[in-house]
Image (tube, rainbow, N blue to C red; front, side, top):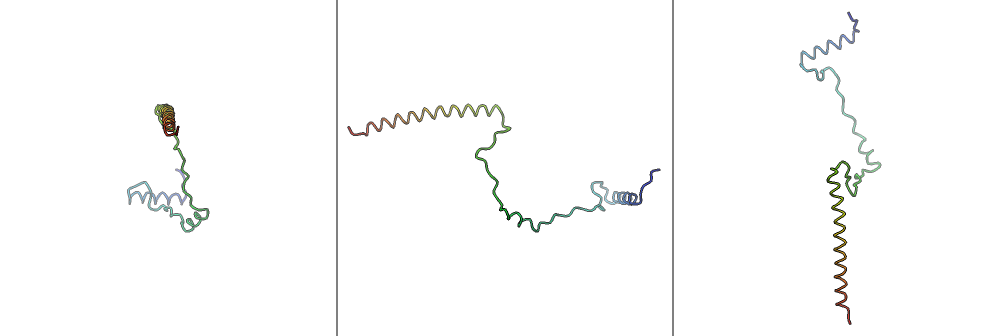
Length: 105
């Protein structure tokens, strides 16, 4: 037979007693529960260096985004630039024509 110390016997006895009374093995009633941490000085310490807003990035990271979508987005941006260049060129030509008509002869 295995020799068990007095403390271990008492602990085992209390555990079995708890099983009979509460019927649960999750957390015996005789075990001490953890207390809540002290919150007395926490706000003062936090305000010493000032509470700052989290920095927001200009563009959200595209890490982990669907590669097919990213590729399509890249092409869409590229072709948007093409169209924008054409529109700007047309606008410049129109502005020149208006300026030529308005100029005194």
